[in-house]
Image 1 (tube, rainbow, N blue to C red):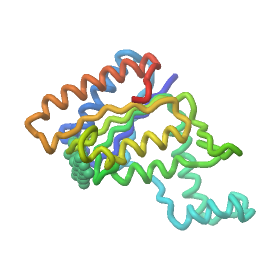
Image 2 (cartoon, rainbow, N blue to C red; image 1 turned 120 degrees about the vertical axis):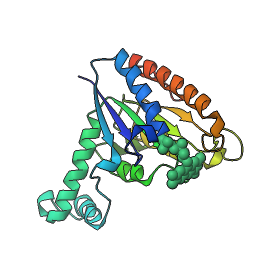
Image 3 (spheres, helix red, strand yellow; image 1 turned 135 degrees about the horizontal axis):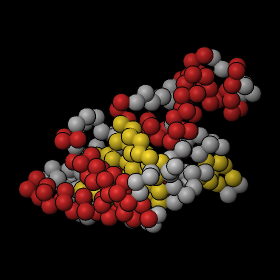
Image 4 (cartoon, rainbow, N blue to C red; image 1 turned 60 degrees about the vertical axis):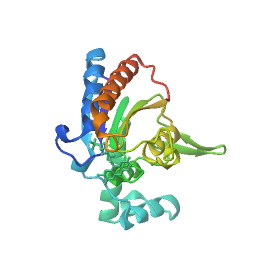
Length: 221
Ligand SMILES: Cc1cc2nc3c(=O)[nH]c(=O)nc-3n(C[C@H](O)[C@H](O)[C@H](O)COP(=O)(O)O)c2cc1C
């Protein structure tokens, strides 16, 4: 059975408070209507125990990669954190479709998303180094990013200042994904009167993206 991982990086715990999550639900509804047999798993990153790359993980990494240690020779804390990291990455890898729902925060994504993604960069698991450079191992996967923004970044003076969606795209391109499409709802804090219009358009785009993803034809937008 195929699996869709629905990942939200937003501390809001009530969908009524989050415009991004409201758009995300439209995506899910439409996707599930088209692909009722796909299992949906929801990950609310703020409710998860995500390892930090701290001193234990740095030591574990160094000991295994160039200090000649075996896994059994790691300290208890190093081994536990490393295992947690690998388990999280394995659970991530086990999906076929991915939906990320994030707001832009201070020009990027909420920092928990970076912490989460730090757990996915594991050499020989999600990417490998070749004489031609690094090569992503997570091939054939499709993702969509639903991003809400208070201001406007698709045109005007802020175009070069958006690092949330751009980061996510580069991460999954690096890791070998086939595509990462984006639905943006922007300008909602700067132009509050236009919220209904902006939301309606984003929901329509999300529904369309869901139908396309369900058909297997999402393209990098
Ligand atoms: C801590 C914080 C930082 C923010 N930084 C930005 C920003 O850099 N650019 C922007 O356009 N909006 C910024 N916003 C506004 C949110 O992106 C915007 O309100 C968005 O619609 C929230 O989506 P949500 O309703 O799904 O939480 C910020 C909001 C917060 C709380």
